[in-house]
Amino acid sequence: MNTIITGLQWGDEGKGKIVDFLTESADVVIRGQGGNNAGHTVITGGNKYVLHLLPSGILWDDKINIIGNGVVLDPVGLVLEIERIEAQGVAITADKLLISDRSHVVLPFHKELDAAREVSLGDQKIGTTKRGIGPAYADKINRCGLRMADLLDKDFATARITHRCAEANEVLARYDLTTFDAAQVIDEVYTAFERLRPHITNTIPVLHSAWKSGNNLLFEGAQGTLLDIDFGTYPFVTSSNTTSGGSCTGSGLPPTAIDAVIGVCKAYTTRVGSGPFPTGDEGLSDYLHGLGREFGATTGRPRGCGWLDTVLLRFACMVNGVTGLAVTNVDGLDAYETLQICTSYDIDGEIHELPPADRSAWDRAVPVYESLPGWKCDTTACTRYEDLPQLAKAYLTRLGELCGAPIAFVGVGPDRTQTLVAP
Image (cartoon, rainbow, N blue to C red):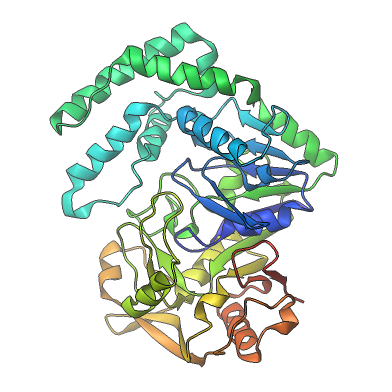
C-alpha cells in the first residue's frame, strides 16, 4: 500500500504524528516538497522530536527515509537538525537517509532575500518563516538555482554562488539588510555538503525499485492544502505544491503508484502568518493557548485558532483525492459545551460551499455555522474509536459527511499511542 499523507488546512494539522503512526507498516518514507519552513512534532515514549527536513520515519531503525527532488534543502540547517536528532539517540546512517541529487539548495542569502521581500510588501506581507524557501524556489523556476548534484562540481558551483551572491547583495543593500561575502557562503555551504555527501544519490531508481518490489511507501506532505501555490489562499501561500500531486512530482513516482491519500485535519482550524481566516475565533485561540497548545514547531509563533471550516476541507478533499480523513486534536475540544462547524460562506448574500479564488471576496466571506453539542469529557484516555463519547463520534461523522470523505484515524493526544483507528 502506497499512501500519501497530506495536510488539508494551513499546515500544522499533526501530519508528523500520523506519518509516524503509519510508518510502522511502511518500508520507505518520502518527503517530496517544501523546506525547513515545515515543522513536524512527534512525541513517542515520552520523548519529543521536532523535525523540519528529516522525514518522520527517521525515528524508526528499519526504515529508508528519502528527501526528494521537490524539496528545497538548506544544507547547513539539515546538518544542524541531524546533529540535534542524533543527540537524542536516533542513529542517522547513509543507508537510512537518502537525499535526492536533484533537490535544490537554499543558500544563506536566500533567507535575507526572504526578509527583503517581506519588507517590500509592507502591510501586505505574507508572513513567511524567512527560511529562504520562496527565493530558493524562485531561483529554481528562473533556472538559476543550484542543485545538490551541482555541488559535486565545485568550480561550477563556486561560479554560480558568486554570481547569485552579487545579485542578492544588490537587492539586500536597498533595504539595509545583511549582505554576504561569497567566499564565506561557499565555505559554509561546502562544510555542510561534505557532511551530507554520503547521503546524496539519485533517489528515483531507489523508489521505483521499492515500488516494483511491493514495498510499502509513505509520502509525507509538508505544510497544507491552503498553502498550495495553486490551490491555496493565494497570495498568502508557500512556494510549492503541498497537495497530493506534489508528492508525485517531488519524488519521481507516477500517480499510478499511489493507492491511498490520507488527508489530515484538526478537529478545529488553525493558521499562522497573514491572510484570510473566516472562522478565526479569539475565544478559542485564548483557550487553546492557555492550555499551552497551538504554537508553531518551526517559529514558536502562536497560531490563530477557529472553528472547523468544512468549506475549505471540502475543497481540499476534492483536489487531493482524499480516500480517508485523519482528524487530530479532538481532545482540544473536550471542554466545550457547544461546537460550531462552518458549512458555507455567505459572500454578498450568495451562499458558497467552496472557497473563492477572488482574493477580495475573502474579506467579505461570512461563515455560516451549524451548531453541535460538545461531549464535555476527557477523550485522552480512549484507546479505541469505540471508546469515544457518542457526541464526539457524532461530531466526527458530521465532519466526514460535510467533507465527502470517511474518517480513518482520530487523534486524542500527542503521543503515538493516542491515535485511534476508525472502524
